[in-house]
Image (cartoon, rainbow, N blue to C red; front, side, top):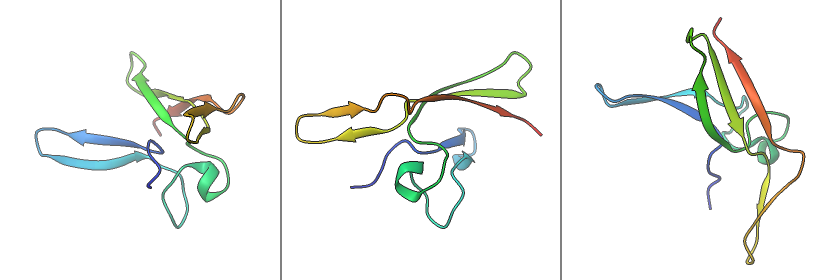
Length: 85
């Protein structure tokens, strides 16, 4: 099974182009808990500020899955602030 929700993409609906916008660095793509180091885990919502130069990203953090269901891990979620250079 592939991990889901570990990056944010930009979609140009007019051109039909999808490109990475925010993704963890490394040899492989994936959630930070799987590839090691810090970074995005499970981003679920984004919103730009009024000026359009800051993106706020809500990341639920680590969620473990088993036969019973999903188990969010306390203290692993974060709100990222991504500023345009």
